[in-house]
Image 1 (tube, rainbow, N blue to C red):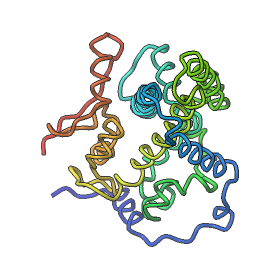
Image 2: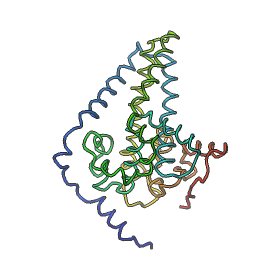
Image 3: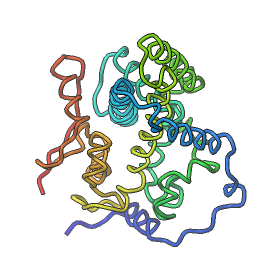
Length: 297
């Protein structure tokens, strides 16, 4: 029988320990983040009104959903956060820009917080600690002060040294402006039902809200529902329906067991759409040093 090391024993104890109330300063809502999220959800609701429906809007939503989710899963997560494979600089930057279109803060903050999460997964120091409940781990955590942001130099120092990442981290919201202007122009020029405004609503706020919740489900649902292939010192689980929505990120227990693996779906039935893109990049000669593990359970 394997004997757990002291660090793992401490992690397991921290995961199951009762949670202390949040400090007073952390209970206050961040008005900027809260206001932005509220605005996006309201605009997304407008997008699904009949007057804004069009097949062009659905196509724009679907294409940009693929671009954005893949940018997060393939670019920000597996490539940059964990360096589970390597690509030419230009490919990395394209993938990171795709992921930054998700408006989940800039790439430095995204990567730094994700690395911090792995260090303290489901422990009180974890910023989306599942021990505080499903709603907290899903989205409430981001509406409050995030102490882990003070440690970005420790967890994302490699990105902080790159001017490209620093610029993108500061101005990530501006990427939506040329996208919105292009969509509006096309919608008006092509006389799409709902016009340019309809296309913009489908491709930006509606897309962002759906991508937000899909990403947040990886933080919440995959720490509450599903099965475990590995006895990790956290609450991570494999959840098939999250894996479908998130292009393979729902095989979360596998990922926490082997964070540096570019492949998350390890069993024959665990389809991993993002992994298929890694394989494609490898066949094209664009991905090298691909790290994977083989499931032997």
